[in-house]
Image (cartoon, rainbow, N blue to C red; front, side, top):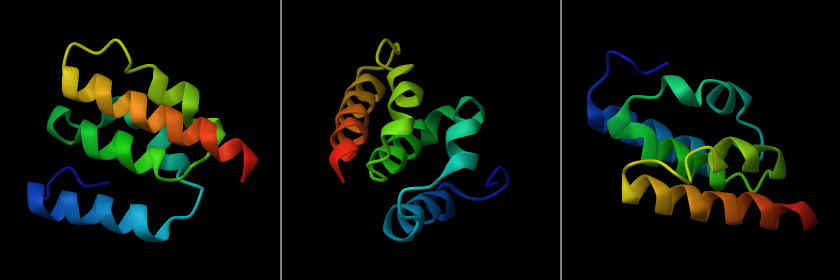
Length: 87
């Protein structure tokens, strides 16, 4: 989706997804393993902002990531997704 863009363009794209996507981001969820390492935190945060419980298992795959920032973001995203069950 954003492979050949600058990091600033990618950050802006994730921000737009967070603001306007609602609860559905299937393509991002399905392709989370292809996200560049420097953008993984943004991608996980974006999925968490959907509050879609279907995405909880996807973000939870990163709870044991080697990077503590990714682990923390995955934990927050998982909590958000699971909190969305009642929405």
